[in-house]
Length: 313
Ligand SMILES: NC(=O)c1ccc[n+]([C@@H]2O[C@H](COP(=O)([O-])OP(=O)(O)OC[C@H]3O[C@@H](n4cnc5c(N)ncnc54)[C@H](O)[C@@H]3O)[C@@H](O)[C@H]2O)c1
Image 1 (cartoon, rainbow, N blue to C red):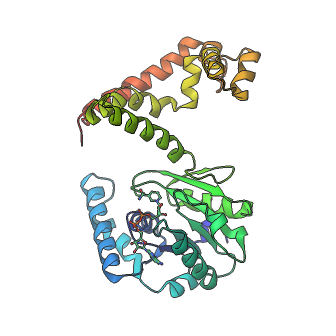
Image 2: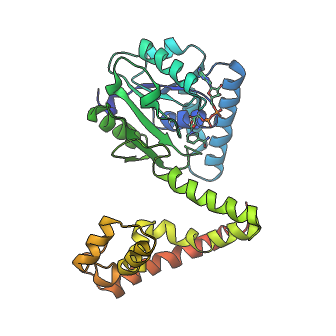
Image 3: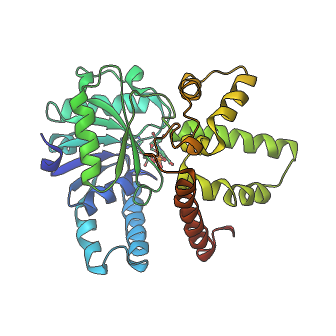
């Protein structure tokens, strides 16, 4: 099956993630069976969808008359087997407990048509190690970010036996419903973003434990610096602006060799100053590159000031 032929999906788990992922599929015109173990949790999930849609209408993201059709495309229920039988794609977003995931995937494999891709939204579990299915080629991770109906990224990560077609299909489907798939070479716990976030949170907790700064001071410091740079140059590209020679010296001083950076330095590709570093700037002068970067910084800074980003939510 091709991603554009998908008509109906099953989302298992209607919690923080599941209800909102269901909404994304439904908004893209896909019928969704939203499955949970308790009726009251499904009722709460549909209330959350209504609340999300109201915000989208109030902020002009969707028209008010689009909302009812989105809700109508979400079919809440507790019968996983029945939902699995009619699914063209399955996504699990149940509690982060190995035994629960195991049971859900067994039920999905038994009920879903042969070859249906079975995806997991797990944050940290190595489901490829935990889950026992007859056909592991159709097992893949599709890791969303809260709230899924707003944050565009979905990290797609294969296990050791995932078929390349499974990965391609999942990425195409995610793109079709208006999200941004990022296909990793392999699954690692935490994927890309949570691994980075983990380091940041650890550093913040260390500062709080030692009383070096208050929570409010830490957040303001981050928003007034990284908060402006990261959206424009990310992390890896920011090293091109630091200068790779300096980065190489610092990392070497720490006893860490990064072959990618050592090679660039050897070749004289030092970053923005030489129009080539981790990124290739296509022969543009340093001044042109900096103008491009800085005009985006200034634009973003204006927008952040305008929306009150430097005050707490
Ligand atoms: N919350 C986040 O920010 C976030 C972000 C990315 C990924 N994740 C991952 O998504 C998954 C779900 O997280 P969440 O925050 O939505 O959890 P949640 O607790 O809000 O929701 C989980 C839902 O799964 C249901 N459930 C449990 N067992 C079930 C079963 N056997 N069949 C059907 N439904 C069942 C629960 O009743 C609950 O409604 C986890 O694997 C988590 O690691 C969470």
